[in-house]
Image 1 (cartoon, rainbow, N blue to C red):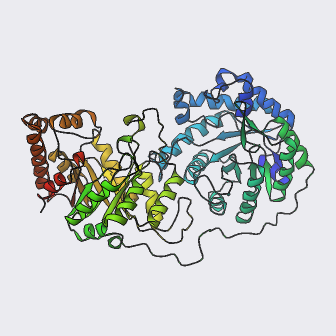
Image 2: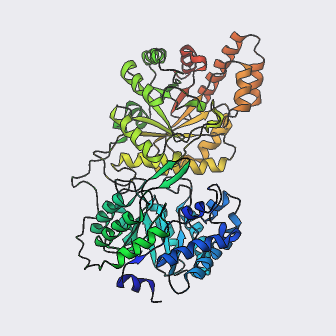
Length: 611
């Protein structure tokens, strides 16, 4: 066979269709690792490959889409990366013979990488390199990197391939119906970037059917000069009597294959829901089409507005709290929890009383302890509008995906909220609904990157928004974390991402706070210490033993146990909190006081130690 790229320049090539759909139809449950079938049921995988060869596919993708260490590790197969990938390539090679090219299929790792997630780009490259090396041992002809939503991760996969070989790369993003990637990156941006990375074929696959994908291909064709690839789903899935069915007929898919070719596509196939019948019709359609000269008009590689970008908002102009911290003024905050219900009047009344007493801002947690309460954003807006005091909006990653977070934050900014405290959030199992699920699309480091980009006038996908936002970015930090080194690293990442101030977990251990401050002196941003006036010995014991991330020294618990009456316990709790405030007053730039049982007077009694 002639080399793949030569064949691609001579004619349109047809890729195979879905592997997962075909395996599911053969009785393989979706909760299994389809990649592991290369070892446990190789004949079943070979049957699917042979069906596509008989249908006329020019390219077979190995059954290795999820065969990286991260995804295989979810099935206890992390140590079998090499075996599964090598065997996957060999099965496809045996089926292809001399009739089809074998493409090593590589999909996303299944975790977020920087700047959105915890995994570093170098770590991601290493995981991809491990899989690519194994596929090379199995003798693939090219690589298809497919169904990527994050351009950063796809770039890491491309570098992993290029670091090991010079085989052709087909790099494919997956997009929404609007043509942008699932993270919002438009083809006018990801296409040229992939071209700069040196991939030979640029394409899109999965997520949508042929019609919306055609529009995306048309946009890509104006943005890049490389050959294009298109592998749509067989329409949108439908639930029919408990089965997931894709309804696009082979004839319909074939009609769009001709339109893809007219837009510059040289590699066409199918993704979810496509079968050998679809591929057979697609092959017949493209064989009847003779592509003309590729005279695609070029579009600008940027999707940013032609206007001069607005300047970022200076920190001291973002909010009154930001102005105070920038000038070195000591800040006082009080935490008010959203109500369990839809009536905010009592919280607003307390916020108004705190404003009158000179408190700088009200800190509003987002679903504290993973319980169902009024949304923190709604309460923040009501407090600012009706109580006339600034809020610090806790915003947790737990319940939203990346695009949902962006939408919430843009809305918050439009309604006047400026101070945010970005947190990962408590897992639902810690709260009132242990069977509820968390999203955790990104963690607080990734979210800090998101908000910092909004402050530069860019959305998650790199497109310009109307004007930069002016969020005052806060993050949480725990000076008493069990893994202190990890906490230091995460704090450094948050500062690097754009954090402008930090609020600590509850401080009862002054020595631990001192160690943290000494360790992080080189990356210093204003630190606001969290303080909690204990109510009783039970409260002290609960925090010491049952609240993750809080360390209460035994001496403090003993003092609370020694209180003879509930009134004495309250007084002792305030006394301890005042001692802590006095001790840390010259170490930090502010204090945040929690409100046991919602007592405003208790918080004010503690803050009197500052005054």
